Length: 293
Image (cartoon, rainbow, N blue to C red):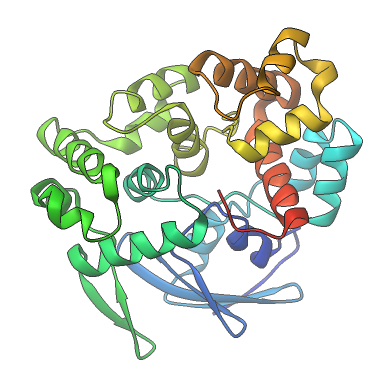
């Protein structure tokens, strides 16, 4: 199928900016998975061509109905974010599955992107359903039941390490309490974040990532080492002097410090702070030519 684009969109930037982990580019096609859907997609100028998905799914998954020029105009507050927007024009947030997103970001803690992708592949291969698509093997993301029943030792063989107990506990919690993650979309940002923090292995950053990438909370502003570095290098005039001084002397962030930086992001960039975060994050990583989270 083909879709002619009359909006701003860049497929490579959107799938290559670090927000998704189970999409691979082979030649000019991106292959990806969403729940039980396997599809491939490519962009040629202002046309999208895809197989395994329909137009409604493509528009929804890539947020093609969002007014991206309006969003980027809203967050374009200074020269640094302006440069990021200009370089990666067309980058859009995608709508991930909340269950897969939650487990993925629990697994992502203190790992670089290559290691995250490897872990999720092993996890899916071991516990997910095998499917064939365009003469290639794919594995769907494991169900809640599969991961809840898995032993911690077996989970560790997928490269989870200490995160194995968090994955198992979170899966059990969702299964036992019959929690529907999709329903968190209906809650305000603060309340939805509070609910996510009740899961094992979910800290402030993981919660913000899940809120931004799968629960449509575009005001979420995840703070990692890259965002911290950006804020300390380019936004110190907007931050308390004592906070800046303290952060420059240490690598880690306390929960209180994280919350202060996240609050700055939400107040400074507004309702689309998450878009600003992703543009800044991808811009900084690209400048440093690295794939670390």
